[in-house]
Length: 185
Image (tube, rainbow, N blue to C red):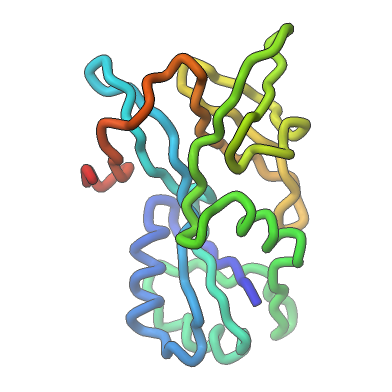
């Protein structure tokens, strides 16, 4: 089952790394931070960058949440395992797990969606993870090449920023940069 761990914003990947190193692999089948691609302009050139999709959260796959909770107390900068009520944890619902899986690839990376603008600035998604979520788009920022999608997650409405590719953009990014790390791939 999938569980969500709240951590400090900007510390998601560091927390996931510590969990992968400290917690026994029998308790944690996978620990990951979903990422999103978006386009960003550097010195007049559009580049593909990678950012955290759910700021402040890391995800853990485990079949033993009670034991996992005890082990997570060893992890520094960990806020909490979400859904804890009277020694019981709530895993993500099947719908929420499908949402996270459906938006990302097997490495939990959400790629750019190709869009077209119809009359009246209506968005038509031609390919990518936004396909089927057109009705959930609540904001559009074409200058930044992103849209905001409202989805239900962990029992509340959450707005996720998703990267888009417009038909007029030249194919192929110059680089992929990880936000806050300065790493260029």
